[in-house]
Image (cartoon, rainbow, N blue to C red; front, side, top):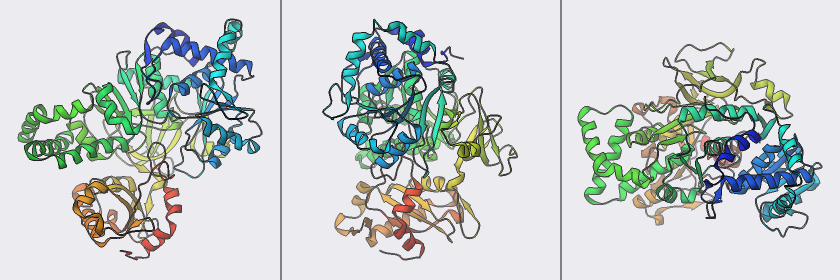
Length: 606
């Protein structure tokens, strides 16, 4: 296993310090081109940690970090870790109610704010946060009355660093592997956030194993797009930090541009981003005229067959020819250097998995949860078959169990249980929830449904809590049905519902550009947040009937009987998706309760 220290202070001292002059971040954030070396990071971590000690921050203190991907996020994270303080991170789009809950519940004494707006929001909550003593805005200066600026802390710490070097060294020496590194509150697919407690040992053992399994080295360049506070992104950022690789921040608006321009070797994303990249390629091929368009469309169709292992010899030969003519150009638009593509944080649609593999992208479908620091399994570099998520990581066990706790037979579906050094300590100040998922001997109940095949590979089929039980007793996993619906070129998003109903219903968000090509906007009827046009509904009904068929793994009970078309997409900004783009089903049900009532009452509404 890769040699990784057991605490973050040791990681900075023993690994990062050897690369002082090497550029770590070519830019501080997606829109700030100033580079940062490993030496810059170490200097700033020392300065900030010194200042925090001077302001009374100590080992075990909880500190909120409400910010997005940027250099200062990583700087604060490492300064806190180097003192044994515990970060409580979250994104800037968190609602005031949720923000107040997690800061109060964790007992944060200090909070860092992304900018002046977030700083004001935090100060406005102080009446609800008795433990919160101060707010620091992550800028060189701040105009928020009652807040400090990060720049001032850095200057203060730099001025006293030499005089307080021994005090800082002593504080770092106290940090132990089993100290809490972070409390990460669950991202909101359920109604009640739970604070996942992860130690230095949890995260760094996971880091060491993943480094080995994925062969990460200092020659790699990571493109970072996911929320920095989410453990999936954090482990990728820590991989770059620990191996001396480069880390390049981007955002969702710049992904395609930065894949082509930065030419990363590693890109980790959630399934929805891989789906958007896939759909972008398919959409481009549909619009491309002449012979080029015909060849690209044929190449993509054959790529799915090849990636899925269903291509005949003649099809593989044609695919190989088209690879040299057009598909290599597709890879070039993604930078041409990707050696490791990772999908995690949700179910990767099978058609996307197959097509990307057939295109020659080294896509590794992985699995894990915040509670597992986060990686539990990942497809290995030599594995090129779609669908599964590889074997458990070394030192990790995964098994499927029945409702009574009995281990399932090979290939039989059950709830997945996980045991390994990366499994959390528990949920902060929530013994009841901890006892529901964590056993005395270290097994964690993931709540995910899946099975382990004869080769030891893990397959995910859905979430136990998302399972829809129809009135006839049939169990339906919504995610696979939604993935099939989204293979239609006219459907951007789909949410399948139907608990206790006779048949499934769905909320659909259309792919506007493709829909407009078929039906002019003059024929759309947008009212009360819905698209009611008869032509639109007729087209989407035909599409549902076309894709929801046996050949796509659909059973009669998986068919969608009724649907409604939403005029606006589900986004993190409107609260219907998490920051990792997973559907917040309980919020969808609450937000669209009247619409769903009409839907299942059988009203057509078109």
